Image (cartoon, rainbow, N blue to C red):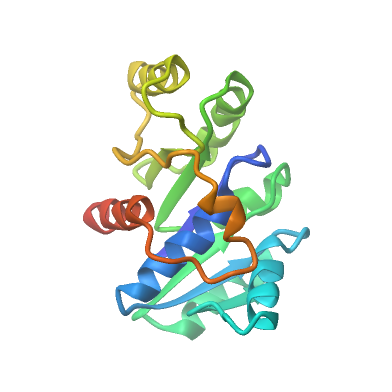
Length: 196
């Protein structure tokens, strides 16, 4: 069972959005999937609760948990299950614990200098030979900001997704609803599966 963790020490870079949309794509592909909400803010579980209250429940479970239970939860779910772990910003113990338990780490980063600065704090927590990729989110295509972050990642030989998630209204508007098919996150899922 793969454990996939969107992680970044910075908030607001798209960790919860990535977790929910990626889980939706796995569910759409017929996989059993659970999002594990380790964030004290409870964004993933609040998303699930709002969707259920609107009678558009998410097609996967969202479970509130803690870092001590993560490996046990992975064992309980079995090998045919995908766990996607939503992590908090700034809590290095939880972030590092989630990364340690992961088969693949997705590091969302938006094309801004502040987000890029925090990226360098997150990458060292990834273990040697562990699969990971930086996922550029909230990108405006054909801009210098996007070109610059891709160049910085490539110049520093940082593993990154070929897929770039564009800035779009559909992501913030999806909070509290079941996400529809999303080609960008379907491509992210395909890239993860190819790596694993």
